[in-house]
Structure formats: C-alpha cells, structure tokens
View: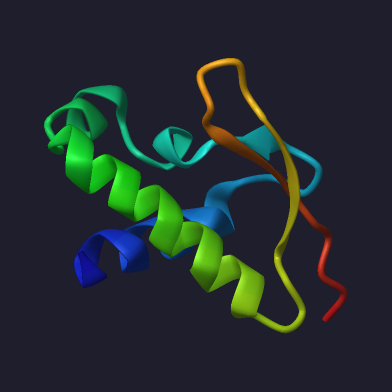
Length: 79
C-alpha cells in the first residue's frame, strides 16, 4: 500500500490549485479499476490520514459524493 499512497501524494503535484478531486482521479481510469475494491477503500483512508497529518495540509477536505467518496480541494500553498 505504501507505493500507492506515494503515487497519490506525488500526483497531487499535478492537481491545479483550487481543483476539486477524489482519490480515484489521481490514477488513470483503467489503472484504478485494476486495484481490488478493498485495496481502493484502504488507499482512500490512508490518503485521508496522510494529507490530514501534513502541515500545512495541501488540501481542503470537503463533503463526500453521493457514492460516499471523499472530495478534496487542492489548496494554494505559498512557498
């Protein structure tokens, strides 16, 4: 799972400031679908924990979608 979380956090660099996304958006569609459902759920929980613990947090945590996927908005981090 460590590889998948590193991938997700790395892909966060490619998300534009202000964009709203769910974790599955950080993968190419067919690659995300190849991951077992249980593992996708775990990736979602681990991603949430990872970004929540970063200071400053790179995302704003929004409401969930109707499919119960957590939505995020990429924050602008001033360097």
